[in-house]
Image (cartoon, rainbow over all chains, first blue to last red):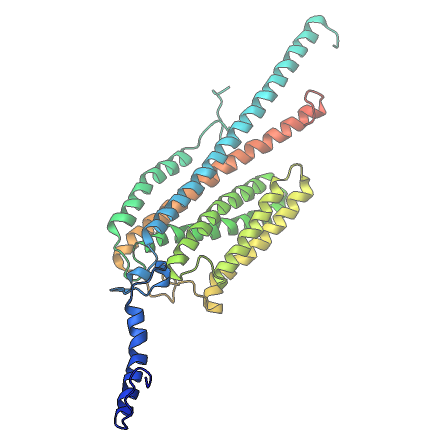
Length: 114
Length: 242
């Protein structure tokens, strides 16, 4: 300041000191007021309420009921598959029994063991 | 073949099962209407609170079916009757389905209520332990050709799981967890307009569970009969062993 303001009067020393302090206090405020080019996450933003911090409930609700439906539907599909597997086994056994019946009829007709 | 239909005939669908299925079909839309239209929005949780109406009945059903599985397994160990084994398997499977519902809907509730998907709360942890025990039971039962000793071992595992169920029930009271106790004795209760939705969903879930257990028991009994027939056919040389 002595260089910028070369007045060597004793009374001006306090004025120089006051200007210096004012510059030190105002500078950060001016700096923060300027728009920054960084991302939104780096900026301070004002909110009117706490809504911005809340977890949205609707997607959670939809997901919960959808997952419940998927669980029940998956189990019903499993039951249907079990029934189909049982039916296949019954058909296989029925085919074997038909063969056995045909064999026994053959044995009865010819009177001898096959 | 179908003229002599007896009570044990697998092809005959019992009237009780049809009535239960009909009740579920009628009650499900009524429960959904009560949950999404009639029940009011909760003040602190908002719309996400409606997860509660299916989450709680699923959790209760899971406990009932797992406990019943333990009882049936105990009877099976005492009597060596395959009928009880079929009931135990069916109850464990349906209980596991409800456990899956609880395990998937619970974290969605927790995200809204506590801000996290999962926390090692006593009730959550004890539920997870019981679920893992019955998962092990079903994996053991699903393993091919476990034989009679394997079935007995699995029955013992189911009894151990059933003994853990009271821990789920009393864990919140004993160990001060974060899990809410709204509808239990020490809870604050729910708004009167929320009660119809909860009662309807409870009734629906219980009847759905009964229907699924019934169907699964019939399927298991059919498979047990088929196993015996196939073994007989193999012994007589009519069928090749799989």
